[in-house]
Every structure is written in structure tokens, then in C-alpha cells.
Amino acid sequence: MTERAGVTGRNTREVPDGNGAARRPPGRVWFMGVLLILLSLTSAAASSVVFSWWLPSDQSRYQEYRAAEPCSVRAIEKEQTDCLKTWRLTVEKTVNKSGGKSSSYEATLTDQDSWRGTVSFGDPGPLLERLKSGDQVTATLWRRDIVVLSQDGVGQNTSEAPRDEVQMNAAAGVIAALVAAQLFVFGAVRLVRPYDHDPFVWKPYGRRLLVTIVAVCFAVGLAAVWTGIPWWCVPAVSVPIVVGTAVMTHPRSRRTTTSP
Picture: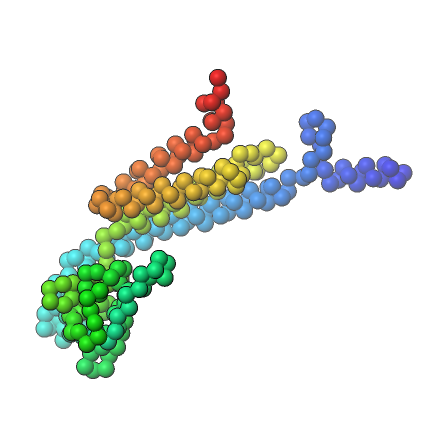
């Protein structure tokens, strides 16, 4: 009786495979599969937000900024903000610190009415590096943000200035979409084949694929910004490269190509 009870107890915790060997129930694998699919839906939603809102919003803001004209006297009196307004300010101090992740480029400004504020820049030149305490500068405001600082014909955009760099927005959206596809496939394989989901695991195939997605999309997006090509070229170029890499680096594909 004791031996029979022990056998029965083991059978309730294990499932025999086709060869008679015992396997653990696939509950944990199924749970991970469902979790990966849910994460893929979150990533897909993020990609949708990028292409439906973030990218069009930044593109529209840049176009509106480029179309803005200097404020008229009447516009200033009505406190309109869609035009370009100039403001004479005094430099109180500057920060020009280059150090990798801790880089900081700032200018603290004041006016005669005791207003005081700080503007940030993406790099030190061409204006920030030459400014010193007490210098007079002209600030250009658009929608209540200082977008340009200038002195003696030399101007520099602040971090608040709209930029025509939506290619990087597209790169972020493509990364989210491809990660969503990867998570969905890895999750679906676990639901369909709980006992045989290799090579759709994190090491090495999953990690290699994720690194490829980020590296390719970032590189293509950056190249698109430098060359000025349209943002839609980013997904058009990135997706085929990533898909091709995923197929070529798949272990079974590699075994096929290397077999005699």
C-alpha cells in the first residue's frame, strides 16, 4: 500500500512523455508564454502611440515653428505665443561640462525686472562656449520657451527648440514593434510547444535578436537624421535587415547552411 501510494503521488505531479519518461507539468511554461504575449501587446501599444501621436506631434510642432514670424506690436499686446518674440537678457553664469553621461551645458539668465531662469543646450557651441558672466544676449521666445540665444550674429538653439529629427521617433517606434513581434513569437511557442520551445529562449537567440533590433534601428535612424531622408525610410530599411538577421541566425537555419 505504501509503495502504491508513492507511485500515485508521483503521477499527480509529473506527465509521462512519449518515451515513458516523466516530465513536469507545463504550467510554468504556459504562464511565461502568456506573460510574454501580454508584454508584446504593451510594446505594440507603445509603437502605436509613437506612430499615431508622438511622431506626428513633433513633426507638426517643427513645421509650425519654422512658419512662425516675428511678433507684431499688436501680437505682443495680446500676449500671443505662436509668434517669435525677442528679449534682452544678461548672462549670470554658464555651465560647460563635458563628461559623457554627466555632460551639462547651461546658461543662467536674468533681466532688469529680477526674472531669472536657466536654459539648456545639447552642446557647447557655437555660442555657449564663448559666453561669460555679464554678457548681454538676445533670447528668442516661442510658445513661452526660449528656443534660441544669440549674441553679435552668433546664435544657438536651446534644448527647447523644435527639431526636424522625427527619424529617431520612427526608430523608437520600430524598436517597440519588433520587440513586440519577438515577445509574441517567443510566448506563442511556449503555449504551443511547452516541452520543446528551443531555440526561442533568452540565451543565446533571444538576447542576440534583441541586441540586433536595437542596434539596427538606432543606426538607421541616426543615419536618416544625418542624411535628411524621410522618416518612413527607417522602418523600410530596418525591418528587412532585422528579419533577415533573425532568419540567418536561427540555429536551425545555421545548421542547414553549414551542413554538407
